[in-house]
Image 1 (tube, rainbow, N blue to C red):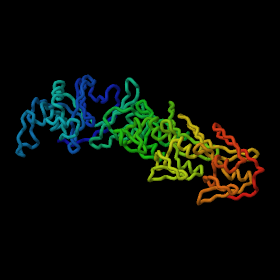
Image 2 (cartoon, rainbow, N blue to C red; image 1 turned 135 degrees about the vertical axis):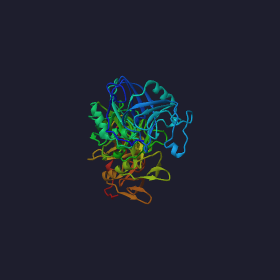
Image 3 (cartoon, rainbow, N blue to C red; image 1 turned 180 degrees about the vertical axis):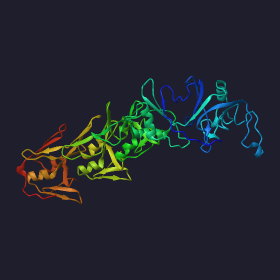
Length: 506
């Protein structure tokens, strides 16, 4: 056997074909063998007329590189094992046990040939001692088309690029670097694309994933587009890939603090935080998805223009509470909100009960929470009822307005805020007590408020005592009010002549 010789990399630039033509000008028939492609190409007058799958030399005994010729042809050859005489072995006659099959095309590389096989399962693998194996019917067909003197070129090219003649889109095909020559490098792929004038703007991260995948099948060359999140440019980019705008799920996960893993429910798909991403796919072990599906997975909205892609979150706008930075998620028709964080912003103690797997507000459990990033999320209508506010949001809106009930006493210089629970409006007792000059007390043990010494149902939020209007009407006969459900405004009318002048802090 001759030693394996490494050739300088050959950049393949293709138009209609997937293997470059390397024939001598005078040759009418020639053979080109690209080892990583496991393919033998037959050229006639400079045009590929046949391709054949082959087996090649193993990594221990790799196939020779370079140019040679067919020097002999044997039909139904007898196989002579290496050193058969010295080792006391017997030649193997033609038949089903013959390792070189039904044809032998001897090459100018001493000891090497193109031949058939009695192990057809090795075609497409690197398993021979350096020779080229073919299916018996293929080598018979090849032998009928070539003869002694036919040029044979062995090459080692793992990256092929060309422009599709119909779509005019650049394509790339990457084969496994079977002999570990380090050929599937980014700079070689970019050089190959540069040779066809298509290297500018390539998304190098996705291209590296294609090189790692080395699928041996045509892939669209990905091109980079800027990706924005709420108007800010992200480090991760979008990529135009096969006519779709896609994005790296791993890149988005790093930005949003999520985790990407194979879906447990759908084979071949990825999941983010346990949620399967529709239409996701893997390239070289890295997960990608169309921008709209990626947005869905991260609870965002997406829009794509000819120049860029944008992800948008639904931002919360409060009429008196700062809600900036609250991470929301959009799923189908619902806006999911981090209920405990929302509670903190409104001064409400919302706890998580691990046994019940529910959040609790004022001792009442609320079921149906979704855990995202370790936080409990509830749909906006459930959060609305827990906080006692109104959340104005429609599907597709990038803002949700949080409306808190406003309380006004005519003649008072300021308004206060209330909340709604079980259809009742809860108002701050301090607001009424100060206006009327009443005493106000609170018994923490019984969780009861005292207005003018009279007990009244009370709830503490953000360090303040609130009572429902129905309970206040029993205590304050001088109270009248009007409540507008649409504007979320409450007007209290009180007869100040009935009040005392003393008050106490709560």
